[in-house]
Length: 320
Image (cartoon, rainbow, N blue to C red; front, side):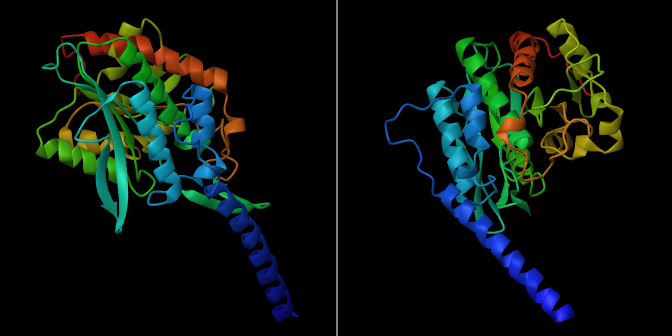
């Protein structure tokens, strides 16, 4: 009987996997926009595309993340964001697979000032535990939301030239252990590039409740960033979440290698507070679960503070 039950379980498992694989194969081979066809780079369209089944969860080293990288490059070109290096792609290897950070820059009117850096990771885990016939972990909140925030801020600065250069970085292989961020921090260190600070954006698709600020800042005690940012924003945009410190989130996102290697203020802003979103690394982290009005409002709340800091000739933000 045990053998029969085991065989039945294996059979049902294979059927479920086969259905999930069929769905994934159809998704990955879904047609892209035709050559020359106008691409829609609105926040909603970008989020929907990045979190779609056609990108198959954007795992580093897959066709899905290649599609995401191509889309980000097209958005940068549409916004007239220049490549930071020779090309937009900052290449590195992950277990023999090619991986790319995507890096652009808006040239400031006073490029001798330290550049500010705005980033987010655009990769995800690819697949999750099968639910029904779905195995794709779409990563809408984690971290398509952060990615579209970077694109929206890139558009903002392309239309409003700052004094400082503003570097926009979409990191790959965050889910593999912050590998893209580690690679870039080490490259910056070798090339003597020292940003003023890194403003990293992670999981901002769902609002928090009962807080007197809009998003929390990891490692808030490491610098005076929150105080300065809220002051120049004339609003309580970022604050302290005790659970973030308890869970060690400061060391668990792409800000950390820049703090560790370059010794600069580097923080992540986030609204995932462990109570407001139950689909972390889950196949139900989908576009339709995101709160678009909150997302747009939060991104807009970042603009005044970042603009002031990008136009300031004084380095007010310091490590504690």
